Structure formats: C-alpha cells, structure tokens
Length: 134
Image (cartoon, rainbow, N blue to C red; front, side, top):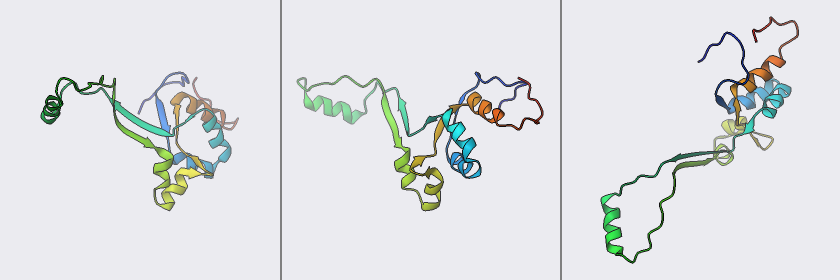
C-alpha cells in the first residue's frame, strides 16, 4: 500500500493483473479493453538466479573421474529456476478457473505500470465526479 496526496502517472511500480481482468471483461468490456491497451500481455514467467560458484562433492568427483581431457563448458551467466507458460498452466486448470483466466483464446494476464492503470481509470470517471488532486 502506498498513499499519495496527488496522482502522478509516471511514478510507481509495475503491477500484474490476472484473473481480475477476466472479471472486469464481464463487468465492463470497454474499460477492460482500454486497460489492456495500456498494458503488456504477460504470457510467461521466468525466474532466474546467479549460478552457484561451488560444486557439490559428487560433481567434483565426476569431474575428477572424467579427467583433464574432459571438455569443460563455460558456466551460464544465470541459472533458470522456473519457466512457466501461463496459457499452458491456465489451460490445465479446472474448468471454472480456466474459464476465468482464458477468454476467447486470450490469456487474461497483463503487466502494466500502476500510473497507467490509474490514468485509464480516472479518464473513465463520470464528468460530474469529485475532482482528484493532480
């Protein structure tokens, strides 16, 4: 949670919107489409870490057994911990969940800046709404 005295559309972190986008489509398809236009589709999740610079004892033993002529490859600059295709994962969920996360063949998962979301929502306020400090 973050509070501010005024809106600053250029400040703030990125957020991810998943199942809520499917619900928003059912409530207000026009607003959902406007939010999608200010977002990026989130289709995959990839988690990486710096590779370890040490060996398990059995790895050292295997290297020793291979001998000095074994071809040693350069370690990667990162280690992939998780790689997840969201459409594949959502497709394998139970029907009720799957039907909320995939609509008309589209994965309802997006990444966008909080400011872009706020700006889109504020533009949709009725003209007679109370003014927002900006």
